[in-house]
Image (cartoon, rainbow, N blue to C red; front, top):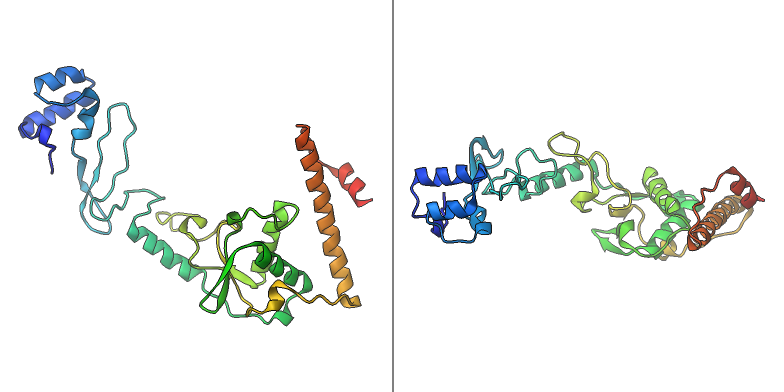
Length: 272
């Protein structure tokens, strides 16, 4: 155990006594005089070496874990491994080993999907894909288009946030896009301790792979306004216009700081 040079003149017994007296709330100024320590009262706790736990071994390194001592009255810090920095009994541990294990789980749970032919997807899905590619940043990686998370853009992809989430959820459920395995670790929920890490994810935080071979048609769909498509187009346009009405109403109410929760009557007015 490394002892700060300002405490090295103390014997083992004196050192243990000093720590006990300090955490028993004895006056720090008296302790500095009694143990002949040259430092400010506020610095004393920072001179103490970490607390060692011989009975708690790191599950990765098998080393005794430690905890940094804090000034009295402060909350205790985490118990961690001095070698790999793994935190004991911590569901949010981000040590290198835990992060590596999390990444392996993600690759197991979200394996890349095969490509779908663009002719197999609906007109609405083609419009959704084009909206994502024109509204979000994306790159080509391993012959796949990778779309950056929705949370990374300031652009508005749809009149309301609910529609933006619906686009991602709808395309994902059909396998047209899939979660990209190199998404940020904190985009996934759960814990390693409980065996639930990676079971779920934040829709707006993960990156997505597009499971369609890239062509200009993806971001600029050629929409044929024939009888077969007209009903689907009309339905989508109607939904978007309704959402624009709600968005406009909310903006106007916010301007005058008026709390308003649209209900059935508002919906009927918009429909008419």
